[in-house]
Image (tube, rainbow, N blue to C red; front, side, top):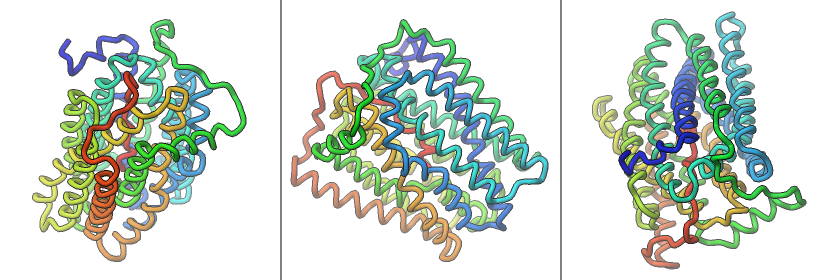
Length: 421
């Protein structure tokens, strides 16, 4: 097996990755269907779309750190089986409401919030479990393969969803996504625990959340990348909203076009993910450079005069997104102690995902009342400003030296970006 795919030689990881590919494809299909359902129910309201996205990520903002503590304390495989089953039940229930004609927009809001609650516990457990499956020697490779799996699903899922919605409406998409979770649960149930590399379980104690915050606050090498990710995630990474608004309100196209645009963004991300699988340790140059490149590209997207040029520019934008997010996450994890892994990952996810409840309604309102193009220009310029500011701070403190983390420190799987919104 080639070095780029060496983690797939591990049986447990093959089972996990195969289930993830099926389930994530269904998840991306549902993202498209949910967005389209909200636009149909509200007569193209960008504000309602922003509220839906915000509610889906609000639980991470409120409870994300406790999810990290939970992951540090419990068996991560069992946690994921429970959360995946809950997510499948939510998708099936929403499909029933739509097919019976009972669905209202407040119900979609409620389901989005419930899905976010399951993510609070699923996300840190899933990230940390990758380390337990492949061990420290192959984790860097698993980062790239996980990201490649995720972005392969982003290419296939929206495209298939667009066709299905155009011919049968949104209910079949919700039902198919519900069934896709069975693949993950089956794979997790077949994992051999005696072949894992289990980390140390943290005993229950008071003040563990506060201890994690103090730990990150005392480490500049962890704090600065987390702040950078938080701000860019809030203002720039709202593609679940911006692409839907551009497809429907600016280019006056249907769900199939939205799916195509999402697939093009994911195609660029896939290329970035495969490069990550071959890359060594992260550097400050790559971290800040990819953030600056993303800001410039997103702002330029808002200025593209037609859908052809807009579509072409989505590919390098997706490449910059994954280069930035993977490098930031690797940088943070390389500096984190093993007993703090769950809490550091939860804090990263909190600022990355938790900024959406703040940024998404603003972006949605801006798209509705100022225009869809403004959402991209504002998001890009905001990301560019914070990236340049961070570059100046990093250069002042440590020049352009490569990041030096703990020796043999593992690198986690990237945050799944239905989380790159």
